[in-house]
Length: 108
Image (cartoon, rainbow, N blue to C red):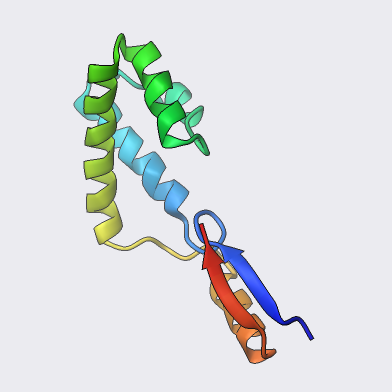
């Protein structure tokens, strides 16, 4: 018997990446294309610090990078408040692990 199963949350159990992409698309609209899809696609999976550094390089400084990233965070929070969808199979995987008697944890 498997004693424990640890699931990653973002991108494994929930489709938070989709919400992030949608938030960046809205930032693109609100900033008249200051950050476009090709650029924001390079930010997927990047740490906050690295993201801010890349934005600063793109936008000409740390202050503007923080403004744009802050806007993205506000939009993300608004979208996430409506609900973040589960990834296909997530519920089943959790139920399978639990029904088999395994301890289940989520890490992110």
